[in-house]
Length: 196
Image (cartoon, rainbow, N blue to C red; front, side, top):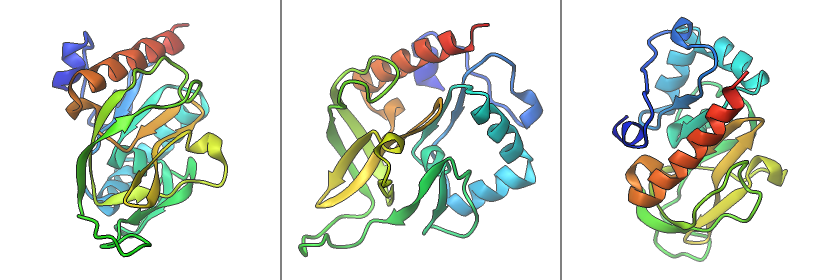
């Protein structure tokens, strides 16, 4: 919320699907447990509303857990994700495939150098901050995972996309000026998409 306010946005926390205003972009935040988040999607009737908005090309940004909810399932717990990205979420192992030790959770800064055309808006290069124990398995179809990164030798989807729903495994709101520039660029694009 603070980062969004700093870039000139006026975010509102929606307590029910009926609170989502027409013509505004949506952010699904990134803290919590997959199973509990899925239960909230279903108990609060969020799933149906988010599916409608996804089909209508409303800009939706998922951050960390929010991005993982775009997927079909997660090793973190039971329940079906939104299924917009045809992949699953896996737990980082204690070692990579070469036997190298991996600290879990994966908490660090990593270079951010997405290729041109990766996102439908301009993206600054720099560094982004990750804090995750689970990762999005890259899909067979690269258009769903346009930007990938590695931890040890484990390749994971750092960003996913389906229609105008974009998920980021990293935390732009914790990534200082790099994250601020990325969020500002996303918000400009998203607001333009929402104009009649």
